[in-house]
Length: 329
Ligand code: ACO
Image (cartoon, rainbow, N blue to C red; front, side, top):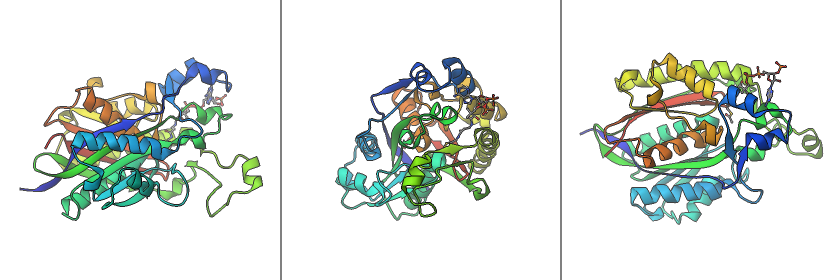
């Protein structure tokens, strides 16, 4: 039998505070009508000042471990996909490892922006399939609100905070991760970026005064690239899995913009009921968006044993990627 990595449990955690479009109307020159029609977002969750990313990542991980019926001590590896760590040093995965009492687990962060969960799933899949590790925790967690310029209407209406997690364990054909695809093009590194705070432009009074620690984005160019890249990577991964789009039971795309999701779904020839959408309630939660949506779909009874799931994402880097998974074990 072919050894595969199966998703044995899912979990998610969100901040309790809801920020609505009406709230944003009071903060910047925007309107509920503009945000809803241009992005599909109605509200998003935003973490409190004293809540770090690891708090939500740990809660999501605890739920996933419970669903998989294993303990922190059973984990061999923790990968936390994020571009919004608790601190630049050390990796937040190590803080999560301590929170989970996962004493035997190796731990590292993976930075691929909104594609982070796909990248982390692909890496985890290889560790499980090779036999190197048995129980691998993959987290996608992001608090983009902390990097958001709340006076910039072109970005502040888009982002939300949250965390999602899955536990991968060995399983057998036909279940588990069937194929993954990862792509990147650094020529577009300035499409979505935070100019200061790294080694190129270390933090100083000037960088703070110039608001260079917040996300800057070329929205329109990113939009076009997103649609093209998500379609391309989805077709690539479907071909590798030997599946047609019509054989996908649920497509869970990165939730960046309702119009991007609709365009990709229609280019792939998918029906509306094949596509999972929660952007209206969550906004763009970057690496957290797919695992949060997956957890909602699983707990909502939308995913059944034997279902073919397609995940696809794009994000800063630019990076993009997709995965196909047959649910069950
Ligand atoms: N409220 C009202 N008007 C606005 C707002 C707002 N919040 N934001 C922009 N506008 C205005 C612009 O100023 C512009 O006005 P103008 O025509 O007078 O110049 C007009 O609306 C249209 O602006 P566009 O940027 O062309 O609008 P577009 O339809 O492209 O929508 C958006 C902008 C929503 C940002 C879209 O381009 C998008 O979703 N892009 C992709 C973003 C994304 O997914 N980023 C990815 C990942 S993030 C990560 O990886 C961490």
